[in-house]
Length: 330
Image 1 (cartoon, helix red, strand yellow):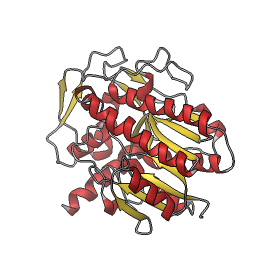
Image 2: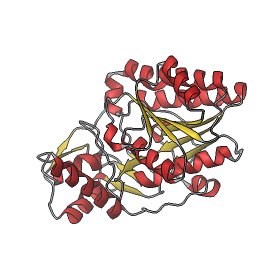
Image 3: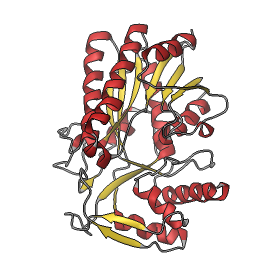
């Protein structure tokens, strides 16, 4: 049995595809499982084994783990849109929570005991203090955050009962694209600010909506901590290395510890693109919180990880270059 073959669920999606490249660059054999509802097969490396299927299918998951000698899992597959989770909570509990429980059961049954989970800063809700540390209260403000927090609870309990070791990575706002142009944010009808803004900058949209300008922030718009997707992908590889070396289970924030408002992001993109965006203001969206910035000191201290793209200009430039490359291929 191979000692470091990794199953990446949702590996044809945005963060998953970047992490697949990062794992291959680190020499890890990779098997990708994705139902392609949001991902694209052409975004993963040609030397990664690919299965189209559902992470909630235990028979398929068992087959993959056994046939490929999988010893570790990175789990991305799930739904991620906050307002949608408010409208469709049971869908989010099914896809994010119930299907992960199925995946964990197969892992426990087959002795796959190294697990990296794609969690979210949405588990914190509206934090009492900013930047927010991993020890802050978890009070999700929407079903998306709750669905992810429930998985963290399952991981904690499975670790205590079955010897599973895990790293739960709580992402702040992920943005940017592979600097080599191999993959990027390709989710249809994406709602992420930087993705939408870059689509507007390339003419794919006629402008951008800003949801709420009356928040208790310096300029009235939401403040977020943006992390470049390639840096986040390397954090997953570092998490696997930590577990492979016998490291204990961890919960870690993934961000840079610097917040930018929606208006600030738009101003920087206007400068980077040279094409000022048409901005329209709209009411607040359900489930959004005013400010969410990471205390990510634990990530840097414990894992062998340091950011390489810690600059909003770089994040926006790579995102824009990806969007331009996609517009050119249409």
